[in-house]
Image (cartoon, rainbow, N blue to C red):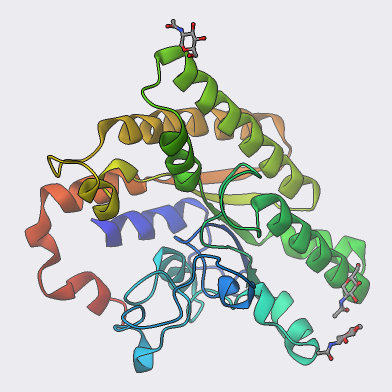
Length: 288
Ligand SMILES: *[C@@H]1O[C@H](CO)[C@@H](O)[C@H](O)[C@H]1NC(C)=O
Ligand SMILES: *[C@@H]1O[C@H](CO)[C@@H](O)[C@H](O)[C@H]1NC(C)=O
Ligand SMILES: *[C@@H]1O[C@H](CO)[C@@H](O)[C@H](O)[C@H]1NC(C)=O
C-alpha cells in the first residue's frame, strides 16, 4: 500500500519520465529529517545512534528517525535521486554549491507548523534557510534562471504531528470550539508557510499529511488501555481535510502552482488493518 501510494503521489506531480531528475527541497519534522538535528546544540531530539539506522546502508545511524530510509528518502528515490538530499546544516563551503542545485533537506525533528512547537529549527527558520539558498542560486545564475530552476523543483512539506502532541499535552479535555480554533490556527500558519515558499519561487508542492498520531506506540503506551488516543487522531484527520481545502484554494488562485497530497493517515491505517501485507520487509526490499 505504502509503495503504491508513493509512486502515484510522484506521478501526480508529473516528474516521472522527465529527462532530468528535478531538484527536491524538503521541509518538516522527524518524518523528514535526515540529520539536521545532529548539528543543533542542546537537548534537541536526536537519532544519530543505534538502533536507528540498523537497516540503513552500512547500518549507519545518520540522524534519521528510522530503522532505515524514511518517507522522504523513498519519495526522492522514486523521482530518480539516490535518497533524500543531505541536511542543510551538513554543508561546508566547498560542498555548498555542488548541492544546492540538486536539492536540500531543511527538516528538523521536533519542529512543527507553529514557532512554539519543539525544535529551534522551526518551519519559519527552515524557510529562512531556503531563502538564503535561493539567493545563493540566483547569485550564481541570475534571478530568471533561478525562477526557472525552482519552478521545476519539487517542494516536500511533512509537518503537523508535533503541534498536535504539544496541544494535547497542554489542553485536555478540549471542546469542539477549542479544537476547531486550534486546527484553524495551524492552517493559517501553514498557509503563510506555503505562500512564503511560493513567493520564493516554489510551484510544485508535495504535501505529506499527518498520520494517525494517536496510534504512535509512545502515545498508546501512555494510555492505560493501550489503545490509540482518539482525540489526537481527530486532530490529524480534521487538519488533513482542512489542508486539502487550503491547497486546493491556493492552487486555484496562484499562477503555476500545482500540488499533490500524500495521505500517511491512510497508509498507516492500511498497514494497521493489514499487517500481513508487510511480512518480510517486502516494501523496503522493493527499493534496494
Ligand atoms: C565559509 O565562508 C564564510 C564566508 O563566505 C566564512 O565566514 C566561513 O568562516 C567559512 N566557513 C568555513 C568552514 O570555511
Ligand atoms: C549565500 O547567501 C548569503 C546571503 O544572501 C550569504 O551571506 C552567504 O555567504 C552565501 N553563501 C555562499 C556559500 O555563497
Ligand atoms: C470551550 O472551552 C473554552 C475554554 O475552556 C470556553 O471558554 C468555552 O466557553 C467552551 N465552549 C463550549 C461550547 O463549551
